[in-house]
Image (cartoon, rainbow, N blue to C red):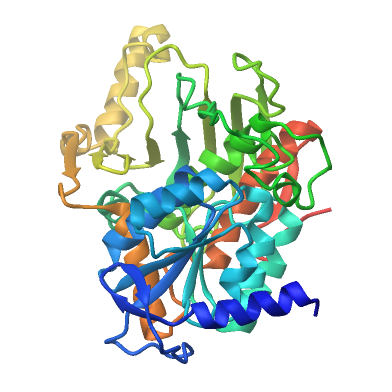
Length: 458
């Protein structure tokens, strides 16, 4: 261990004397054994990655769990660390080096809200350090990283939640209830989309004027990505580059597929094909801004086989109505995070005749004979369909899906249980197919996936 390292550990040990009051850190002089958390204790958490989503997650965590306390933050850009102290309190511990957070014994849980290519590394290191982990979606950047994260989680015995929070909304829970009750018959088709048409929505986020090699740690940001000269656009708009992000599939498809898996209890598709292009935002990015993927789901004990079509269009200058439609043989569930419409429709038992039908081409005598047989086969009460039924659901105004998702996480942390609504196995079953959507697009081929064993089929 070098002298700087020894000095750091010594200084951190001394500086780690904190006592919890309110939702921000104050100096204290007791370090707890955090293997078990008393119901009366606060859960002390740190956020690693204080960009846009890092701040959103931190605020949602505080809303979702009054007994959670935000005590530390890590980020590679100094301006964000300054903002942390301005926004959350001067006593928040801040650092560029996330490992300093993992070394602190007084921190129970970490929120991993970094660029996608860092998710697996920091998650596994956090679990190894004995931390509970909330990891933003997608859980991993590449399919071959998933199993090692799951293994690390199981070995650690710690609580872990993946951050695709829409499934914790009242609307998604109602969609699940209706589907499980058989309200739409046998599922056969799903379509879900998330279109945008604005620069910020296309990830062209603001870049601070002081961005430089002095104010941020470029080398650490690159991590295991290819080495490249400093480029502020790549740092602050990393979603636009496949070296660090996962494109529209990893950012948005993952929400769509997570919702469908939550509602249907599906394990995932078995065949995936994508088509797309870079249509509008030709600003140096190397991922498509229009992507359509078709996913084929096999029949299971819980649902019939069905097709799912996912779409993201960042160049949609037309009408945008982002939703998910789950369609079955007796109706459909159309829902967003805030509302839901169930439409029930059943065909009459009798098929009917006439109109645009071959009946009109029969001879007069054959028409009479046909009608005679039809009337004998179908009673009058089988010839008319039931009226179409529509049921609407609006989520309560106080419903906060993001806070709910964190509440579920922290409640499991408190109880020492692993049963979060979106554990790593669930998270990987959602992440892997959307990453396969990317592979299909870039490799121009169908990807065959084993949803039970969670691996690519050769």
